[in-house]
Structures are given as C-alpha cells and as structure tokens.
Image (spheres, rainbow, N blue to C red):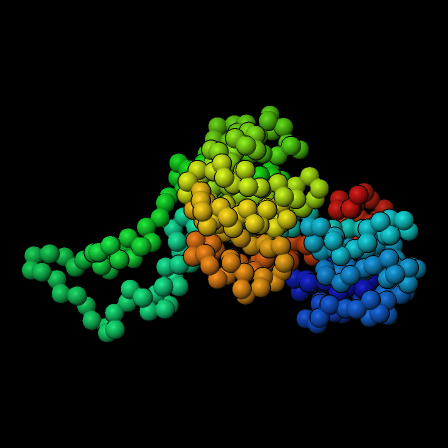
Length: 342
C-alpha cells in the first residue's frame, strides 16, 4: 500500500511506515501547500492520502484512481470534496476533538486576559508607561517596611488595570461539544456558574450543581461572559445578532474561538462602541488574515485579538497524527473506523 503523507505531524511516522510505502512531501516537510498538479503527481498511484491543508478536489480525486482512503488531520475536512470521495467509495477520515484541550485552554486564557486586562498592562509596560527612568528604589520611612505599590493615584496601574475575578461569575456557553465541555469543567474549577445552550444535548445530560441548560435569550441576559463553541452552518451563522448582544448585562464580555460566521460582526462592533458589551476576545474573523485597518485592530482597547491559534499546540498535532495512524491500522485490519466522516 502506498501512502502519500503531506500533513503536519509530530515527527514519528513509524506507524505509517509499518503500513506500507510512505512518501512524505509538502507541508509535512515545511513546504507550502501543494497545487492540484503537484498533488496528482504524488498521489496518482497511491492508495492513501494524508493531508492537512492541501485541497483535494473532485479533479484530484478523479486523477488518483487507486485511492481508497483520504485522511484529513483536522476537526473538519473542509479541504476535501467529501461528496466526490464518497461517490467513489473512498473513505474520508478526520480528527474530531484533536484540538479540544488546546481551544478550551485558550478560551480560559482569553477569559482571564479580558477580566484582568493582562495584554493591556503588558503592552503599557513595554511602551515604558508606569516605569521609572532610573533603577532607583523608593525611600522607606523609619519604622515602616518597604512598600511594593507602584503608585498611589488615579493614574496608577493598580487603578487603570483594575479588573474582575472569575469566581462567582456566570459563564454562558453556546455549544456543549468536545470544547464546550472542557471549558465548563475548567470554569467550574474557578468557581463559576455555567449556563449552556445546545439543541443537540439534553438537559439531563447537563443539569447538575453549577451547570444548567437554558434558552439562548436567557443565557445572554444572565451571563457575565458568553463563550461561543459551535460550528458554522445554516443553523448557526448570524446566530449572535443585535437583539441578543443588546440584551447582555452592561460590561458583559464575549469570547469567540469557534467560527466568525456565527456572529453578526456589524452588531458586535456596534455593541462594543455603544454598549452594553464591556469587551470581547476573538480568535476568528470573517476574513482571515484580519486586515490592518479593521476596527478590532485600530479602534478598541477592550478587544483582545489572536490570529486563529486556538488549536495551535504541539499536543494537538501529536493527537491527530496518532488518531489517523490508528484508524488506518483499523482499516488495514478490516475493523470499524472511529474517525470516518459520514
């Protein structure tokens, strides 16, 4: 069996080598995405194609008559023409949940950053604000111990960056899948109450002390922080709209590490400019890369932006490599596949 491997990987490909002839190229070697022609040249006689970002179109599939399995090392095989593959009887594998821990942890990091103004205070110090020109200790009055307060004034960093604690706050989760469940578990460890909206999860599956299923409208009214964990599609695009944003508590926060399309961006910008939103943390955008004149870049000091890195950890790569290797082993052994796209 010939395996063409162009995916991001954790370094050890011995499990794939044991399955047959392995050809490693493209992104797997740190090279750019492959063109259709390059992909066809590599995989025209291959039985298995493992990729991360290369576009496996109907034309590519048609030009690779021996393909039996196409594996995509992502949570959603958006770069694979799954209908064309299935029409040919080709199995499509993917890696659901491979970056769930990574995305959940970034979500909590953004939550803390919003609540405590961590990026803003860091940036201020890097600009030289609140610092002294010389390395000189302040004098301590006789009989007193040395104080470590930077300044006592309305302009001191203690006042400028005074934030809020997560404990006893209410977190609203839209989506309770692999990532949402992990966020809920960590948030409860911080002492937060958690509200959940997910039409695909029953109340019996959710309701327990500190965790409760509710309505979409109720969640936006009651939550201090709303975090989005749902996929893009007809059922969810534009879900977070002006009426919902305008119903939030004054100073409430919004976090989106899922998909930009689920939020009405114009409504979000309006809620940031005019209230009630106190801030937002965003890892995804309607156009990526984000352009430098976007209001999220130029206008809002209370918006934390990251460049779509929620799943960008070494551990996520190790997980997806292991998941695909294990399912290919099952395929060769004639066993049921765990990660087949349906």
